[in-house]
Length: 126
Image (cartoon, rainbow, N blue to C red; front, side, top):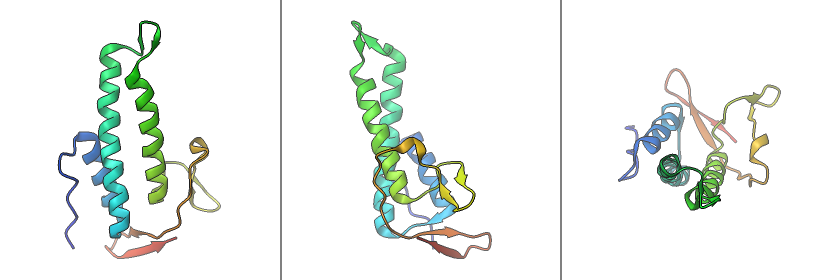
């Protein structure tokens, strides 16, 4: 089955996220919907970060409005990734689950994510 295309208008950060997730996982349609939103958030975070990099973190002694929005969008992006159940890096060795310690307050969503194995077969995780 061909890999779905990233959402129209995706930028570099979103396309990297799309390719990285779909290189290792086969997603159901509801999971693709979450990934599409994550791609949009990743692109928005990249654009907001560029704005803060250009202008600096403070404007007239106050936090840059883009910096405040960047923080919020990063939280949304992290929650979308958690909802996809994509490992975030180091994993708990005993349980094989993502380390979500820095995502306190995130909501856990039940679902199944099929990991593509070396031979191209999909294996279910719940």
